Image (cartoon, rainbow, N blue to C red):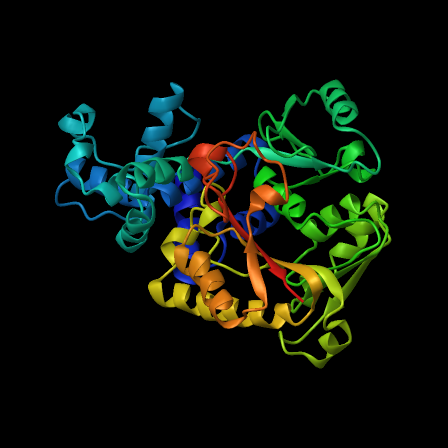
Length: 420
């Protein structure tokens, strides 16, 4: 089966089942024998269509009027785009489209609606237009259509950033220090990392720089009791435990026991002992009663639309709906209220998402503050020195990273301090 056919079938599964594209690709490559080059070609085709589906459809209608677009024909259009950009034709890509005379004619992209030019659902475009304005929305949407870079977080309990950088260079992997996070390295290319000795020795974890900065906003100190209320697989729990010099207690709490199980081997690899996983059924679980009012830091890395990660997960924009966004909002409000009960007097509640939607960010926090008067908003500039970060709004108390300015995934955070 050729690459275009395989990519087209994978795209059909992605759009029909709403399963995550990266997981479907991983499963496909595990169950189908294919070489590294072929896997790279198929992945490039799938992600090109996911990023530019609407634009490819418009190009298809322009070049092939009367021929309804299919996912296979859009994949073929993507192959043409990739070939033109790289200047090389990948092997074994048959011509699935009829040859016509006007295929080389310039495509009038500027005549398309602005959201179609950047392949963004119109309702998301309109939402961002209200939040950010025309120029910022255009730049943001374009940035989200570019692949994200690979960042790693250095485990400062075991090595230094400079030492790891030198070690990786000896393995043929070049990197540069992340501009904002003091623990990060940004790698050149997309090297395989899980088999490397430095990874197996616990010298680093793969983590976007923006995600690393959330740990610094929490600002945990040695000896504290800290709660990671939506821990997932525990990436931020690991970081906070490291910042605490493995002294104190980090409760890693989540409803997904399977994801949380991944934390124990990661803790062991990183040489960390202060993390305690706790699986709960819901945010009102009785198991949380023993933790009420006892944590000086509570991080709520809330389940969200993940629109800030579209560089890595472009399929999200086609799955998300206004109704789904509202469901996220209601869930986030409930989780934040439950987490507030765990904060000690004078402690801090840090609310974070990897979303760029105001409904999941500012509106959640402002609604919480209107009801919980014993909490107040602390500006991020008072907690962590992030002057090197580009694009932060110095006058805003909210911490917001936009990919077109920060070269990270999109993140939002608010630091809420309990008065008494």
